[in-house]
Image 1 (tube, rainbow, N blue to C red):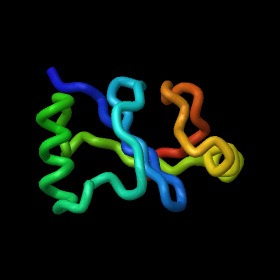
Image 2 (image 1 turned 135 degrees about the horizontal axis):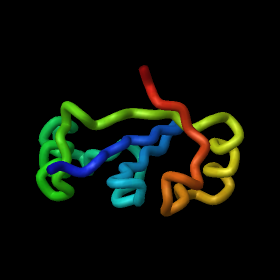
Image 3 (image 1 turned 120 degrees about the vertical axis):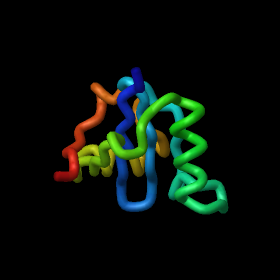
Image 4 (image 1 turned 90 degrees about the vertical axis):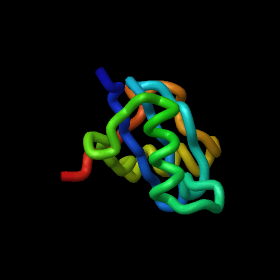
Length: 85
């Protein structure tokens, strides 16, 4: 059974949440490598399916908080976001 993965995005910041916990964050998560290869390695590391990974955007209000704090909250439940359709 695989874990639930949600990639939460802001204007210039991304955070990967696995089962509601922040595991990776930064400016465009790929560390200078191919984005596909990078996310494939994350899928193996954290045991999630790339096909089932959801994407979301933070709300404007949370984005302002993110700019001020410089980091996502550790728990997805503390973040105001909307899932992509």
